[in-house]
Length: 576
Image (tube, rainbow, N blue to C red; front, top):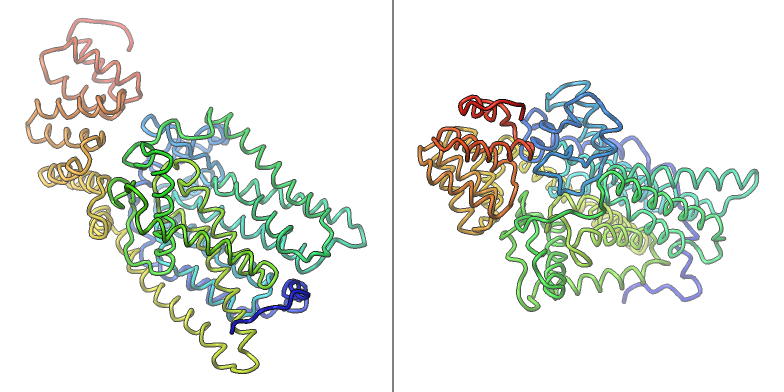
């Protein structure tokens, strides 16, 4: 029979926290082990070149590679408002500022960017270790869970792409805020003399400051007021005065409202202007179909946290086969997972606060991007699991500590076996993470590895084609693009890139048709307009070429020199 706390002592686990807290959980050996788990798997690839999103969000981002312009960073999206990325609603000025600072110090040498990300990942892992300790977890259970998080292979995308330091920053600030609230309201009790009002004001200040830092790093910080509310009002002892806790949560919530106003001022909207079908096929699904597909993704997320065997950098159309008609088995499994998390939270919130808070930290940030309540900018991504996986690790620390408590007196060796098992899993995860990081040595290696896991991704075939073009393999690039278009004939980017391959092969009429198809699918597409402009320059129809090129310049394509040549050829004058 399982352990069942008597009704009158439901608060015992929480009320015992001040007595269980010791400085031992912060021993240098524990800290060093967690840092090693976070840093060592990534050291072999710190000098790998910038790939994929890093090219657009770092190397070609004017907010990163230009002079540090704080006003410009605060008033644009995270991709620098590039013409082809203006629809992206990412507002992450603190992350962009840190990238700009790295560029100011080291230029485009990838090593400082990757080293910074590894350091931030280690800090997030240590913040998790500290939060587990504040919630009463013993040294070894807390260390094992933090090492499990630090070495998890699903974090390769978040840690290895420089632009994804937004995930690392946001998670660090969220975990720090939760650790601060835990010490203040679960382990120290209500503020007492001397100067209780000063302590309350200081707590409110730090709640607001850490919320602001988390939000300015990534939108997932919006869940922090809810998480603080869960911790203070659902996990704190019943006799705990709530007055100072209300101010703590209110300060965090008011900061969120201020951030939303700043975001709307900078972007002119709160949500994406449009969401490409290839990024998230659920945007065209009905409400019921979107929700059942989102439940299927809940199971996908849980499976990746437990057994990260098939990893990819793209889960868009048609990698996962979603949306699926009806209520597939994966959706039932997702619904059962949601019900189990809610039930386990209700059961543990008075018995095991680390488990309960971990479940809240797992569920709430994921719910924000799950597509369950509204369509997200992307269908799914492994980087979105970074903060939720910290919640899973915190719940794991609570479970290990609970097993230690219940079995320690009767079977000390048996009580330690789960901790040893999780440490062994962390070691295996570290080896898997190092292996996955090796895929980032080149774009072709990364896309080949991802396609091996999910060959039905139109985006992956398109990205592989771009890499082949960069290597001069135009014929193979065209073959990859044909694979992409066989999966999704509406992929405007694939049509545009196929036009480049066709033009390179001398198929000018076919290239013009491909550029035209891209523009039919995405009117005003900057890249397609620019490519069509340069193609038409070689043709005798100068009026048409000039009209297309002027439109391309208006959309931001770098073809102003082509316009000048066409005007000179036609005997026209005047600035474009």
